[in-house]
Image (tube, rainbow, N blue to C red):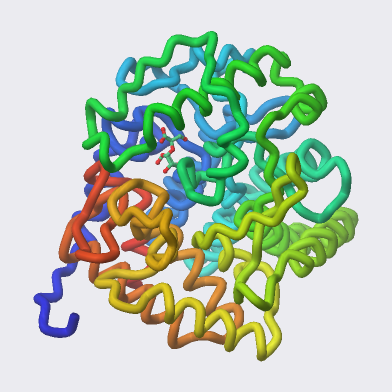
Length: 426
Ligand code: 2M8
């Protein structure tokens, strides 16, 4: 790695964010994803916070324009029409004043808000509290929604009802649970993604049939959370989602304290306790990682994906667990040009070029490094960060990278990859 030319791409990263700006919100990339995506925007907001605090706040302010009455922050906000993406606003058939999808995505929002608030304070901004306060209120409403709508049985784990909610759409983690979902749809499937990107790097048609079957099912529930919970053919208590929610809750506790919101500190602390205890029960010594729970079959999901390590952002491991995680990650990285692969290379499900079935994702490495550092595994954290920065400098701001070659894949000039570069190369 050290023999390669070191390129400084900070200007390029900022230029990508500028180019993907559609007026206070950022699209993940032109054409392939022409709207505002929930967790992309949270990462992007942190990228902006490294050089433009106002724009960072603005990104989150625009995202919550899509927040529903019940507190859910949808996974897509369709601010302006575009016909280059499927499924568009018409397929979702939701009733918000700005068209949105009807499902959500990982709540990185709370993490981003704390990051931006801290950056604003460090920059001596007098208006930090004033800008943070309404966003904190929105984040709190969304965390309440998560606990009520997605952990009604109080396991201390939040569930996804659609693979798109996880952000890791076609991960092998969903294979068994998704196989039970019928492939029939009432919506006509008109994929656009494979017109922008090589189909071999995308989910398969049969995955899309099931994705859209789920959309049809929940639209028929009128997007009512209780009805959806009762009729969901896909329901997974996801450790990646729960880890991010728990971590974002810790960040909101800190903000509540700064804002002098004592009742909210207590409420969020209780939420945090539930979630971290729930996560604690999902650790498996034999696998050296955490496992999600299939709520339809009642079985552990043992597929080796990055999700198994993400709870590190929220929980404190003991010494034995730390050693186990280090050994497991070393096993996944063995022989890879860039790490961390999103599926373990020794798994039969590993496909180094197919989307969430193997490729390296810069934002996952960002979360991984954060979680490792929170658990005093600084060396490993640093090596993942340096590897990510190196991959971007060699291959560009791609959507994801082939771990076996370092090749950049998927969409180009990707916003969250640019944001990851800005934050990880500081
Ligand atoms: C991908 O997901 C969308 C659906 O939400 C898609 O494939 O159409 C995922 O990589 C997801 O994590 C990401 O937020 C989104 C936009 O970058 O693209």
